[in-house]
Length: 308
Image (cartoon, rainbow, N blue to C red; front, top):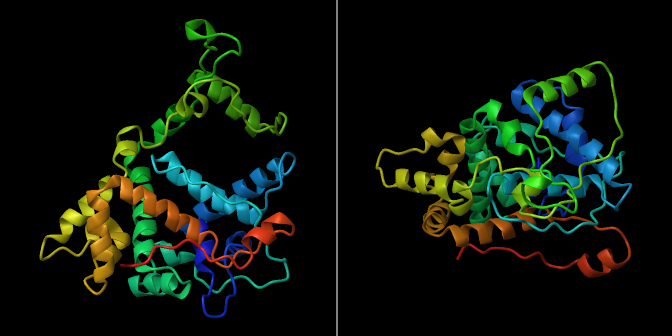
């Protein structure tokens, strides 16, 4: 969703960009399928989250979209990406982007995907980094047993003021979770507060383990290595890695092949470039709220990755 929001920017006309309009485009779409359903579910969650967070901080829908993408990458072992807040949301009267929602679903041609990145002003190097992150995200989702997601996501709660075993709260059982889900189905509502960690310890202890586990955190370029290995085969098309693999291994894009090779050799360099590329695509043509944000960011050239 965050990538689609950024790719709506047209570098030549300087119109579009990450302004939250993607949410309206998704929710008003008549398209069908699991891909669109997932986008709609995510859009509704973001709307609810941004409303709740507005009680505590100034955050727009456009900010929420950018943050969600960064957190999705971090949840599977990717880098921690800082997001600049202060984007303005597009007025409701503004038309939605003509960028197809299915652009990153595999239903559109690879040429359309590459053209969309270039139209927005993104370099092939940035495209390679971002598509690599999307490939990793999709692969982790497919490989992770669905019944294991909730268990791994539970944080390890500790009673304030206590340490060690004496601090552990009673762990939720499957019966406890079933009871809570039953209350939700019956219309029972608790307060709308969002969980705020109030315990010491690691990030995993506070919020729960990452979706992908610890192995990929140390080797986030794991799947890029596999794609790059396939590139050495004369008959390889990348199809075993889906449409993203085909784009990354397209012989018509030697720049992409070059950076795929470099990223497969260095996890550190890949994470560094992914951080910069994600920051770039979530700021393409973004307009910021008045005051210090506008003074600091308006007209400031984005940090980018050239293809050299």
